[in-house]
Length: 500
Image (tube, rainbow, N blue to C red; front, side):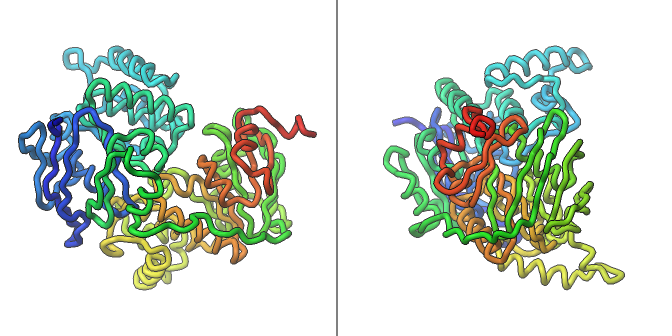
């Protein structure tokens, strides 16, 4: 019988007296891919942060190669050959790629940094990852997918024995996911153990050898992946049967609330034209780099456009800043909630009122009113936190996303742009957000939804706009909203010009 590389015994973790892990015990085998599943708040990220030294357990212990070890910092974990690729980026934007890869592991020549050597080794590693990313590129100029590749390279530079991956494929294209799967196979052949968190059940089924499922801080099952199907995974995660995840779509009004005409940014967007109806979900599909996020940012005044007119409710408007957009009742949830949406060392009320704070000021900030409104959002979105005073860094990804939604809903928008709204979120929280989207459309709120998950686009959208290389390639409605048609346009095999 294979001896475990790591054994976890009766791990308990409490935050401010609230227990989030309950006596979790688990054997981890050498060279396996162990999947870890659970709803947001189930405790999976907390468990893996304990293994990687970010948190220290309240009680219980861990052994490595049969010997009890103390992991009280990320330095301890690194020394023991344990590395973690975080769900949210931990990069320094002002540094370039190779400097981030070797941050904390710098190669020196005497007392000076050996930058040529680090640049060369970074280039070699990036080539092995099958990416043409330049070692000299500034991180602040990279796309979300490219930043994820830097995180993977950063974790691999130490030749880690145990590699923890928290939602590593969420922002990768299909091609990049294939590269990632090949990389995992290579690491397995070298005997590296991989602990893999994902909410993509199909990926878990394809990639993992065994699967540990947590619910409410308890380990509820440990199965060989060959012995469990996706439906059983979902049922064990939520503790009950899941009904249809996508809600019934209401019919939108014929009233047009937003028109975008001839929107262009040199080298980024080319002549973007679309309209949005009241109570409609307008999906934006396309491969990463297609220009969907850039379109949203230009509409919101976050990017300077070269040309383009915007009409709201039939009236021409000028939007140069996010404040201009908010004044016209537009809201935008960025795909990068930690980098652009939330302040992680702020508590829940302060995050919710980041944009709407003026409504709570009467000479001084009315903290009592602020907290009362925050409590309403906590109840409305079922935000799980030890208290209102909890900083966002201590919340799970799904609960952070709910706070982010609350922040924008507190501006009372009529038009809501959602960019990858369920990235890194479990299946039950996805269902909650989908039903919230439907309730908004029933109230007359109009939604622009950017998503890389085709099933999500198909399941929620009344119409779908498909983009490629900064252009709109096609617009789909009715039965034409299907995976085949979307991919034809996204890949450039079909265009509206060809059909005209």
